[in-house]
Image 1 (cartoon, rainbow, N blue to C red):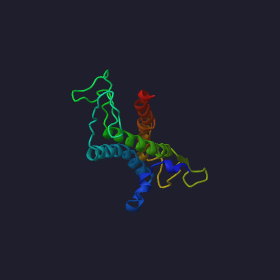
Image 2 (cartoon, helix red, strand yellow; image 1 turned 60 degrees about the vertical axis):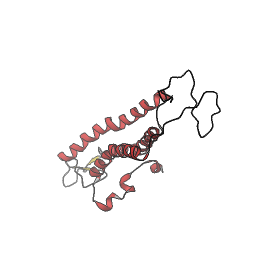
Image 3 (spheres, rainbow, N blue to C red; image 1 turned 90 degrees about the vertical axis):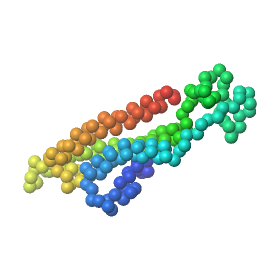
Image 4 (cartoon, rainbow, N blue to C red; image 1 turned 120 degrees about the vertical axis):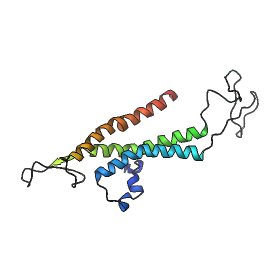
Length: 178
C-alpha cells in the first residue's frame, strides 16, 4: 500500500527487460541513481530554466499579480534595484524543490534495499552443506563470498551517507525556514 510513495526506477523503466540483474546489481544501480538523478535535475534546471530577474516597483505603488515584488525603502538592494537579501531565482527554487521531491521519493526504497543487503539465512542443520548462508531475497547470492562482503561494506557506507545523510540534508535546508 505504501509503495506509491517509493520511486523504484528499476521497475518504472523495466530494467529487467534489458538486463538480468540480481539483487546486488539492482542495489548498486539504486545507489548510483541518487547522484545521477541529482545531476540530471540540476542540469535540466540549468538548461530549461532561465533565471528570471525580479523587477522592483516603487514603494507605495499598488502591487499587482503581474509585478508582485515590492521593495521596502529600508531594505538593502543591489545596484540594479533588485532585492539583495532574497536573490534566489525561480530556477534555483524549482531545482531545489525537484531534488527534495526526488530524494523524498527515492529514500524509502533505498532504505529498504540497504537493509535487505544484510538479510542472510543459514541453511538448516540437516541440509547438504549446513555452513553455507544464502541471501533471503535472492537465493542465487551466497553470503560467504568476497564479492558479497564488498556489498555489505557498501551498504554500511550507504547507511551513513544516504540513510543518515539525506535527513540531515533536509534538516540543514529546512531549519532556517522554521
